[in-house]
Length: 184
Image 1 (cartoon, rainbow, N blue to C red):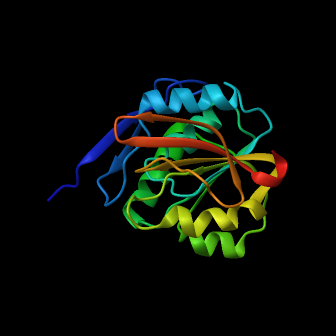
Image 2 (cartoon, rainbow, N blue to C red; image 1 turned 135 degrees about the horizontal axis):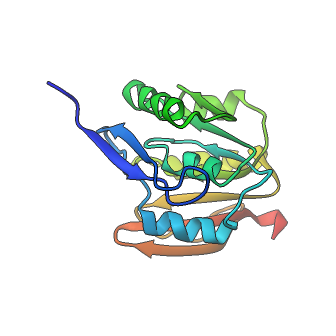
């Protein structure tokens, strides 16, 4: 039986209007176009010189969008083998450079990697407590002035160590831009 391929469109930058294809996978839900547009308005339309981490890459919409908008480097982390393969195929189709796609668990990546990022995209599967596990670890992976974009099934309030910089809701998606509390 053939696997269903889903599509999401890159909305701006070098790869504007290009389609990303990805398989069905448990917990994978691409960030909606409207939410991505808001996010990149918050971040500034161009990401020149920024290093980005897409920790639950999924469809790759956030990571490829960041690179399309001239991020200096994007690291995508995805554990699911079929989804990881689709990310690699999309990178090949786009002739994407300065993108590293790793097949790895998010916690394992953070435990082993010591890079610092300007923007971390965090859109984990819902209902598994990922944000509570990961947010305490992310401050050590942010460059000075770095931001974390987080999606959740509920509004994030009173997050220890973090300040809510901006937030919104679209349908069932609550989205947030966070700063380390000690940098606010």
